[in-house]
Amino acid sequence: MLSGHIGRRVCLQDLPAGSACRICLQDLPAGFPRGRTTGTLDRALDDTRLEDLSQSAMRSYSGVRFMTLIGYHASHEQFAPSELRDLVMLAEQCGFRCAKSSDHFHPWSDRQGHSGHAWSWLGAAMQTSSLPFGIISAPGYRYHPAVLAQAAATCGEMFPGRLWIALGSGEAINEAITGQAWPEKAERNARLAECVDVIRALFAGETVTHRGRVTVIEARLYSRPTVPVPLFGAAVSASTAAFVGEWADGLLTTSGGDIATTREVIAAFRQVAGNDKPVYLQHALSWASTEAEALHQALDQWGPVAAGGEVNWDLRRPSDFDRVARSVGANEINGCLKVSADIGRHVGWLEDLALLGADHIYLHCVGRNQAAFIEAFGGRLSSSGFAGTQGNPHR
Image: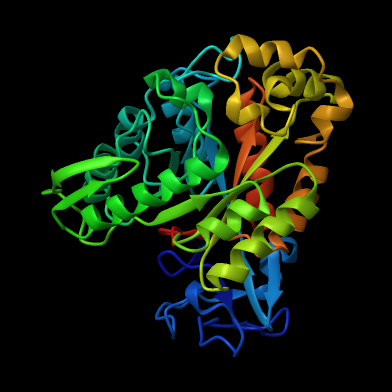
């Protein structure tokens, strides 16, 4: 297996295929996104042969080869916390190299039937696994930014270098439970920006007083990790990607629909943030033993989320999403996630996403068949080279 620099994409010296030698991590050429390394990388790979490394997951960027890491997305909306913890353990055993957690108060659909507290779960999951983890949360509503900062700092202190958090503007189905008026997107972004400033100041050890869209009075974190937890920005549109590019340590976006949209979101982020920062994808798919079952699982579990537009951010009840699902058919569901019983097709779609320069791709199989999915995909992706890095891959 390959061993990569902590938090960096693994870069391989461009040597002829079949050469038997020590492949050393090296300086990158001019023009390569420098944030993906720290100057000269100081680790080397074990003796190996390039022909033993599948080319399907290796990509070129300015003449340097790299590998995209594949992670497992833990969907709290769909599974009990105890089952989800065990699924993450299985994912690690089967070759997934990182994990990401959703953070819901309600599921999208009554049929999904769960929504454990993600931060309570996260400590247990990180204790029972050695994987690095990410989580997406929305500060400023059900999470006061100081409380969210405390939660992240606590996990970061217990599990150094293994946690990142993506901050987003939220969805009414989770955040409107506080009784606050649910604002339009521009106002939600403004609130998020204030929360980011508060969280960063607390991570830095400052005593924070802030009066604005959120109020914080003399808050200070006494238990903090040595290195602050990275703050990613969550975005599914080019405009939001440009907004988070102003402050985020990296980008978390979605894929599964039109790859052109994903490309536009990444480009918008990089235009503002530069090429130095990592890009993570949450990739929605449905796989089963037959095409019919894969489509059925997609419609049953993810049909309520397939409407698009502002609906996903503004509806407040799972039953409302279930009503939306009545109008969703095969065409609509295929427009927002990849549906196939052929693992080879899924691998091909992932290869296309890797070409966009994604550092991590977190697979969210939306069906109930999680154990079968993990076992089937873990082995296939590992043999394809996607999951061929070990160590701590978070950046």
